[in-house]
Image 1: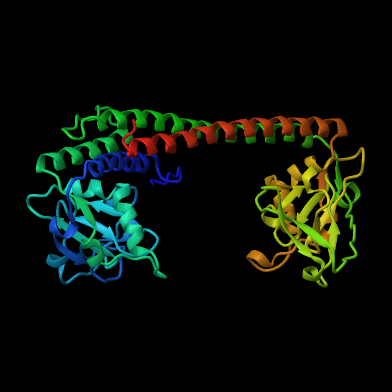
Image 2: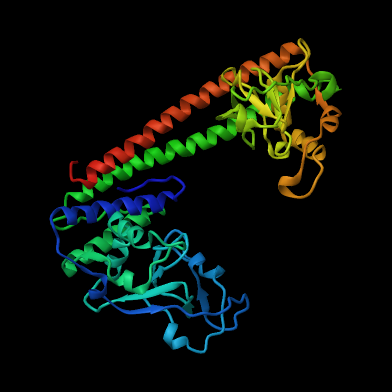
Length: 440
């Protein structure tokens, strides 16, 4: 079953969907299958050399140069190669990534500059009666990827060698249908790149699949637009919040953090027979999360502190990267380790939500960073005394409460947007599943 990810480019997604629909239809009508080796020739491993920025020889294409079904030849480096004729790329070569996280990724070569290919690639070339675009279209389908995944499973370093690649099974269709499928997938891709041409007609037995692909293309475009609008909306929402915050914080007096929200410790006497559910804080302002409960025996000599809703929390090891949060109502009754710094704003002077927002702004994180001495990366620790000496903005409590209400409304809007996007995301896989089974 095709796994969708909007981390893929939209073009990659649509090409894979279209290819999967066509090859699923061929599978349903029990099209004869042959090993890939019967349709190709010249299987060859690439050339081992060092990439060089200066034009000392031919271009030297590597796995990392294959991006989104394309190659930016301007960025491809060069190499010294004494066997250029042996490794020189030509039209209709298909390059295959044979190792690493991108095992299975392919590229159809068309009008390349003088270039050779690197050792972690395999070159295939179609036999004279085989359409290169058909082989490439197959390599975009779920039929192909399921076989690749099966072949590379079980190894510490994902890889598929030439023998395994040659044994992949592919539908054997007429030259006319090969060309039609190649043209269709090429058009799907060009439409994602902005071309306005209609999808070409498909001959029997795939004629009906054109309409299905067109409908899914339309739905996917709507989902893509929803994601784009949500991302744009999130940027605008964050800018609005920052503007609202600045409008009251910039003109407000400053006070020492220790005077506004002093440290509070609710020490816990650990019972060896007790149970202690812990609380964690995500970095980058992502809030709190619940850890599994520890038994008193598991806690051992570690110190624990009671967390109450509304506490302003800092993870003293990761505060510099935004591990700062306000304890929610559902966090009450949980415990923090000695790595937690727990502060309680003075009533009538400040709110935890306002202070938390400040510390997650650019200025606030800079102050936290300055108060977190230590080495690079994870060795930086927020000190209690340095935190207490940070000057924080303290506008009128009524303004802070107004800003808190605004944050609540924003979170409600974000929740509704997330629900809508999730519904869209669930709709497409359901329709695709029916399309692949021939139920549309």
